[in-house]
Length: 115
Image 1 (cartoon, rainbow, N blue to C red):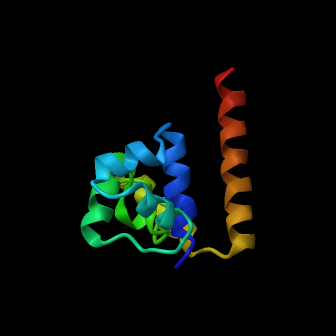
Image 2 (spheres, one colour):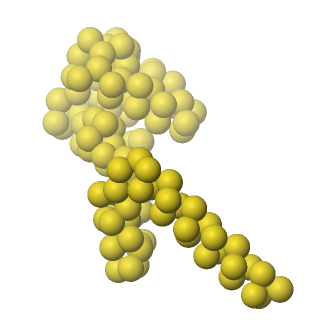
């Protein structure tokens, strides 16, 4: 439950937004933002929706339920990229390493052919 606090702080700092400014934009007290970031209080659904818009990240990303920051990331993938990502996510750690090595080898081969 408390992992989201790091994500909120990380996104806020990345956008160079102070707790005071975020609290004003969100319509809550600065102490509420501090409580979110310290894991003492969970944002309401309406606050989470506003945070998502202000911080330009999906609610799932903010709450650590997804590694996809926003839907634009998913929408910009081609069908083949989406399939590859799906297969990759099903692999164990060893399989992921082998897949990366294989793809890197393919890229190295393409670079040498294109020279």
